[in-house]
Length: 320
Ligand code: NAD
Ligand code: SER
Image 1 (tube, rainbow, N blue to C red):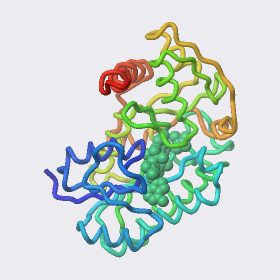
Image 2: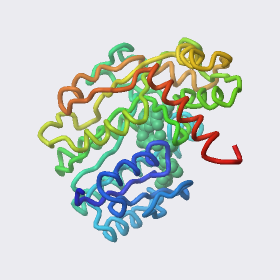
Image 3: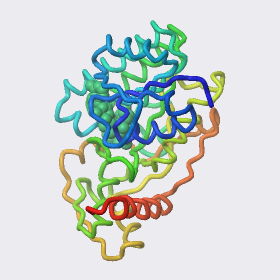
């Protein structure tokens, strides 16, 4: 077992609830401190309440547990962010600053602070989006992530803090629910399909977006964080690719397994956010620097999601 003590912010969210389990397997249960403003739904211990805007509490917890690494996941995602722009800016920026300041003052060894495909905008090349490209995001979430990437690089260059980051694509998962993003439809559609319900997608049929299955996203995170420091050439945030598909394509993939499944489209305000993002990602630098390779494509993801979501919804609880 490794000796580090890890603190996760936003640990009860879509990524945090699965990343905490993966980190506990690697580091030992007591070495991973889950924190959030929400009570964990399932056992996620040790757990401490932490509002990321409360820097004194963050200092206190890092000292109390002698934390050596921080995984900073607390954030407001794209769709919620558009409804509450100032609030999203405050949580995403002040929250990140608090983590960076504590990392600087208390000599944290490594920080993980994810970014997103939301940093791209309508002037960014839409296909095979390069690592270094035009970043003029149009959502408040994307603006905060683009600024955050640059602050991470600043703290690395100025103070030598080993901060690492991935521009996650939309994440598909069955264990944990997504938290207010534009890519959430790619999880919601599976819930409707396995429950035998019609799904009305909030994006148009042909809206192509980069996506990734949670096991690949978790593995990418761990592989990046384990890579030797000298291999890390990107200190803003790494492009990461896995698969890209449209709502029509994922719906048809589900129909191959659940032929009665039906879906339609009723675009809402999230369409504009999705239209400003790109379709596919060039991740050659992540592949070169830390040997990144995705394992799940759309058919493999669909198959695994349906098997596991059925188990979760219909086998684990007698109520369902
Ligand atoms: P999520 O919304 O599911 O979880 C975020 C967690 O942060 C929640 O549990 C919430 O309670 C917590 N939180 C909110 N405000 C807080 C505060 N003031 N103090 C402490 N905790 C607070 O998000 P996620 O999908 O798990 O995303 C984690 C990170 O990954 C975020 O930075 C997000 O931008 C990034 N990301 C996610 C995706 C995705 O598809 N899920 C894609 C790209 C990037
Ligand atoms: N999945 C996220 C969202 O839709 C992208 O960062 O907000």
